[in-house]
Image (cartoon, rainbow, N blue to C red; front, side):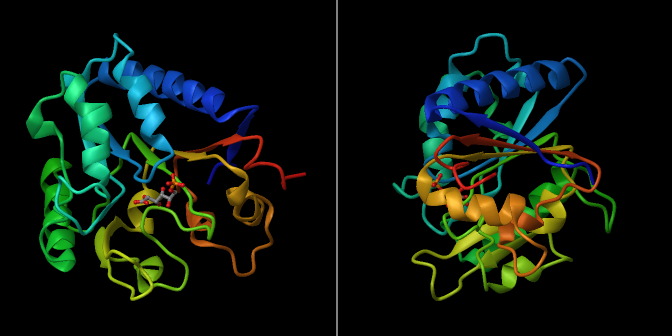
Length: 241
Ligand code: 6PG
């Protein structure tokens, strides 16, 4: 596994701008060679990034397939829906074919949605039995507790090593989730974490500089043959040496 590449920016806006440029460059390179498959992060941090991406003109969206790292078990028009946020600020504004937007169906029971999404991955990546989907890029955020996607500390989802997608209906979760599992995250060609804000600083230190002990879920994102990059603002990085 390659070592993580860590980039720290003075402000969150500079982080978002840099992320947009880096992702645009990646998409321009990969779409010049063929289809490109990206899993979007949920939560609030990537909203500005998605807006910025929608304004970059020379991305060939006709060759981009968009997936999600995780989703809340809510309908697609719900305010908590990760798909809805990305659709409103990015996907509705660019020329990506509808059939290349692969939404996790939060409106059906989470276990059904997880199994259905696993079928979507197997079909769209044309996977052989036992093969993992290799995303060109997976975007991730991280919670103050060190969760990523919907792989929350202490939930069974973090231990899943066989399935590609699972439901996480841990009683501590306000809304049940559907999430990609670590095998899929770690099969990616590139994983980019976008983390901003001082509330994330303790988890950032634990994940990036912590000892091997009981590290939070985000520490287990270690792409086997891929590249791992953290984009942090100064507040989130304040506890790093
Ligand atoms: C979600 C995300 C989740 C998110 C972190 C950070 O569905 O909420 O996938 O993992 O990335 O909770 O969220 P913020 O960006 O809102 O801080």
